[in-house]
Image (cartoon, rainbow, N blue to C red; front, top):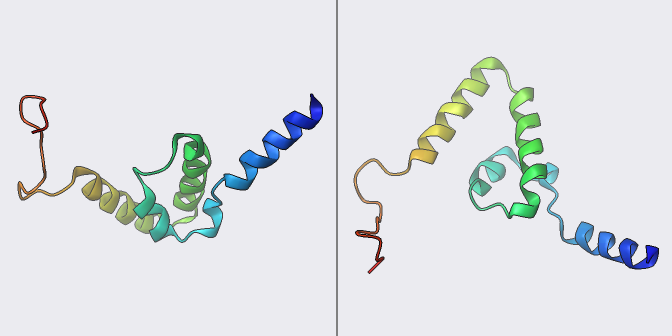
Length: 86
């Protein structure tokens, strides 16, 4: 049983994403597309990067992330009408 657990743990670790090797821009680009299994490590890395920034840099980064989260403001986004998606 211990061998099976060790093998499974090794397999999971082999497929885990190393977010510390990614640039901050790559992390920002990955927002919204991170696998659920990797979210806690992604959030931890993102938080450590944000804490390492100066207050001015942090404010600028937060502003740009809020803008990217809100999407296009020109009405060009797709939206399903009446819940049918046709």
